[in-house]
Length: 442
Image 1 (tube, helix red, strand yellow):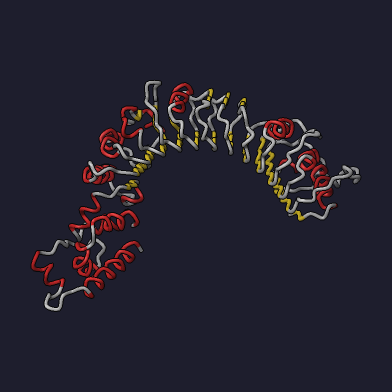
Image 2 (cartoon, helix red, strand yellow):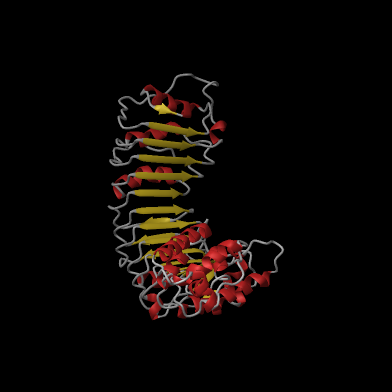
């Protein structure tokens, strides 16, 4: 599809040249033939398309060629570079590089060194051109660590805006991304940094990254102190995503991050404390266990997702006063031992609530009425109880009298979806109360 779009652009340029051709001038093809054709073998196998492109591509301005290259999928401009000197030059100036096994060719029988050689050749051809976006995903390329230092020195230069580095295997987490990579020029331009399956050890001496707005660390060896140093030097940060970083036990978010609005922490199993002084958090996602959370001022918090043991009771007792402006809440507990109490506090602005309960065979599902009572603006409620409700006392095995809570009115509630519904009495009681108010329940 990319090559077809390119051919249409070339055709328009050729028609424009034909209209402007002098009456005594002869054909463009003859002029190009006299100068010597720059075209070479057509890698796409379409010789007729190559003949048409060779007549008009050199006449396109250089900035247009570069722009066309930036819009095409990676393979198309690489192939076009085989058939035109103009496109070869434009290919070598391409500011966006995404290199992985799929793009390089997913031949399962290809030797590992062939992939590394291809990457090495591509980067050598792009040396010194100023790459803006560099994505290097080495999954399935196991010998690449021997070349990483050279590749990063070529690609990560002043002016780069996004760097994504994903190594191939957990065994390669010993590779340490050098802080010297973040030179003065790089620090003044980089906006997005994503590292996976490696080590990263920034120090307090690292200078400020004034334009960095997004940081994503997945399976990265970095300590809590090192991360705090790095965050203190990133005052423009808006999004922080940490996943499977097993050396972080205490996460401290400094107060200089006034623009941080999204914080996601997942599967950092050794993490025990999160202390945030960022005052403008809008969205917070936490997946883990036994984490003490202190988010400071949370008046701006709108979206919350927490999956922790005992989080359902915590959400009902603590969140209405700590995060009074929540609009979306998603909570999941795999060991909920305490039933949800009825409380006078309210989620005044909560519109969407999702609750997942796993491994909670003795939990009283009817106690979730507390959330309905405390959420006068609730519109959508999703409840997933899995198969644990099957172990509870059935409505068919004892008294058929159902509990009721008087004066329950939910004028805004439009939809309730329950996954894993069974004949557990407490679940039937909850459903009966919802049906009595003529709600849509599925």
